[in-house]
Length: 294
Image (cartoon, rainbow, N blue to C red; front, side):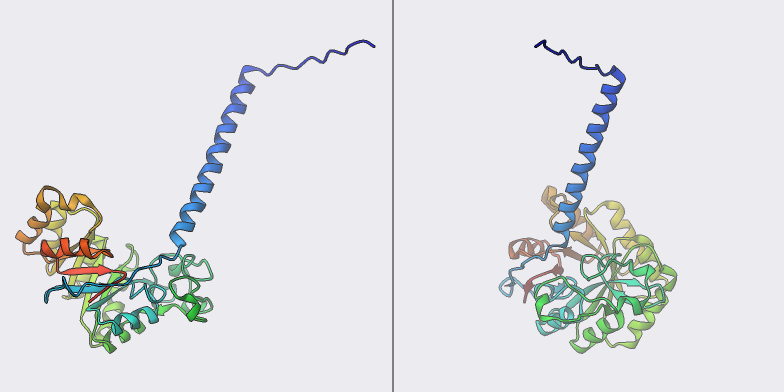
């Protein structure tokens, strides 16, 4: 029996390069997809907060603000979370607001409802009636809430008024600034103090034309330019990221520069009493937290 020799067809150099490139692209796409899914799962995961009291380090001029309501007790930015904040005695409750397609201001942190609700709708492109068809299905103690609907800004303000809490309203994004008069009209309906906050200068400038209420410019790292902006806007403080170490460099020089400029200071989002004490010792008077109580 004779041996059969099978010759292997050689690939051209160009074909080899093409296969290698396609393999690398395929690998990168798969890695990116897996990373994206991992990040999305992390972002949607409910944090199990440890509720702690800071009464030993509190001073009379320090104001605790419940971040998206008392989200350690109930799903964030919902009526129960704001009610728990009021019951716990928080000075203020922070919320995030967007305007629906048909002009209803609702409370939601993300522009899309995917993370917190059993749907994936862009708030600003959806009517309020459609949003009401969906339920909140994420957040702490969600099992206690059946058919929990999206909260309106009006309802949030009603709860703030009921519990004598300051309404701390974050103006999200750069859209709908031409409709801020609707927010002012809503706040005028309710007897509660209002503070506006935003990462976007355009939002604060638009609201300043309509309201003399106190504001805070949200920043990660405080800069001299931020200080100038807050001073020029008037009745505007700076609320900085307490996890960003650059704000504390050089013996907290930039924080002291804010104080020299007579700006009120807030810090977010503090869940550690030791970090809170560091901020208080530096003269920060507004503390936004997920789980620290009086």
